[in-house]
Amino acid sequence: MSLFSDHPRARWAVPSAAVVLIAAGSLLASRTASADSGLPPRSAAQLLVDLQQSATRQLSGTVVQTANLGLPDIPGLTGQASGSPVAKAGAANLTSIVSGTHTWRVWLGGPSQARVALVGGSGESDVIRNGNDVWVWSSADKSAVHHTVTAKDRAGVPSAPTDLPKTPDEAAQKALAAIDPTTQVTTAGTAVVAGRQAYELVLQPRTKDTRVAQVRIAVDAEKYVPLRVQVYSTKVANPAVEVGFTAIDFAAPESRQFQFTPPPGTSVSESNSVAPGPSGPTTKPAEPKVVGSGWTSVAVTTMPGQLAGASQDKQLEGMLSSVPKVTGDWGSGRVVDGTLFSAVLADDGRVAVGAVAPALLYAALKAS
Image (cartoon, rainbow, N blue to C red; front, side, top):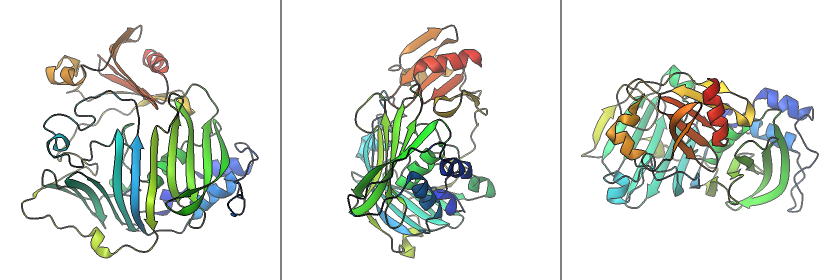
């Protein structure tokens, strides 16, 4: 779920153009969800409308998130660096969720009340929204960052490829945004998730040039909310990313779940960014140039000035020591070749990222 949206319907909405295309049959195979479980059949077009029109605004539950992105062990990226809160205390940390299995507790109280808590080891990390107040709290290092939501925040915050969704809703929202004529949308029968019956919606790229094999969304058969999202890679058999409820309750959560008072001894700071992380001003990268389209699109951008050419910096060089070096007619740099996406950090400060093999990144860098 997006903690910062003032428009709850947008969390469930499918782009209207996609719905029109699907209704016209241009994206849709003829299969419908199986009635083997006793559920009435529903087509993919019907499920997409169901997701859009769901009236559910309140829920709580437990979510398990598993990721196998095939990323190298880069200190600072995975949160496992020596001296980090995770390494020190074995506690949950918001920067450690790009690999392995993690458990979240989630609460949704309405358009401006939401909370997610990453629980593990002896600590907990929370993001809590209550009206215009957002708190990011870590029990491991006894810190809390407060942010006041602005109109700019409500417009949405861009995420990095490794900013994994924390709930099935958030994962489904990202997947559904990818629907266009390059996507085949079908159904795959039914499933049981968190003890509830669900239809399975399948999004499959029509191209073989993407690392994404398919996305499967389990839609609650009664409430029509996403219960589980599985993203499959062309490189591994099991889901590369899976986010799903193991328990869910559609009753309104207690208001106390959205009230936060920093515990005694907590270091409190103000932030100008709604994203979890250090407070204080940041330098934003340039707007990316998109090369290609659909599932094979590649985003090329330039890192902020103080980081451009930072491969010469000893600290960053140490962090990237496990990342292979590459060269070509596009230049030189380092490449991360994962299960769902690849990324190139060029020595000249450019960065290329896409759900494709590195060869398409090199071509995009050469063309940009």
